[in-house]
Length: 308
Image (cartoon, rainbow, N blue to C red; front, side, top):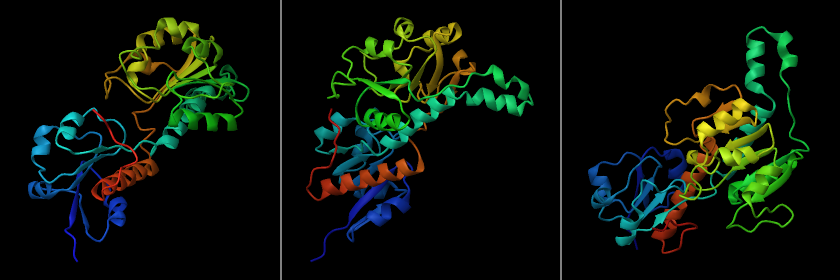
């Protein structure tokens, strides 16, 4: 008995080479759908920059599942999808290692002073190398704010570097020996702090002048989570005074950001929100989105689903 073909469409750029090998014999993937394709679509693989609202859903009357590559659903009207009985699959964990490695990319660059040392060599100023004090990770303390998948992966890597680890997260179970129940205590005890929490009304601007002042002089802050967690004006003041010894930013608010004077500071390391978007992590998240959509179409529960 033949089964009707299930149509998967891409909403945003999706690599066919990752998706097609995952398709079953009665499934078809359309990377560049036209209006007719959308009208027949049973599943949609949705990239982060693609907005899904009622008008888009009206164009896909046969849609049974939305699969978002990643966990952010800011541009997806999840409530409207739920109202129509369309699950919104998400793919947590697909870029966990990539983001965690990104943390150490920034941290090592700042601790080892790579930007400044590069300019010395490039500028033919070899004799100035003794003016740059290069640091180490071993024996120092890393404070992890947010002990989810990424925070735990950061801990694993940190231990390999010989770092002492502390962690704060009011919602996660943390081993007692590294747990801090107050974020200020963690900041005070840490040489380096890395952020892995969502942006909410409570966390917006949480690293302000008061909290930065609690840190050890010369401490380093890394933010690969959400740009709004850090007050950049306060961070710049702390950098200029030496209270903050370095700042690594992969995220900004808004994105792309307007130029901020902190971007020009020599002890700042910047990347344009790409630490979680490596080739491997992109393949992982597309794969997980496809598998999640297939689970829904087969009547199974996906591994993760967004809720309004």
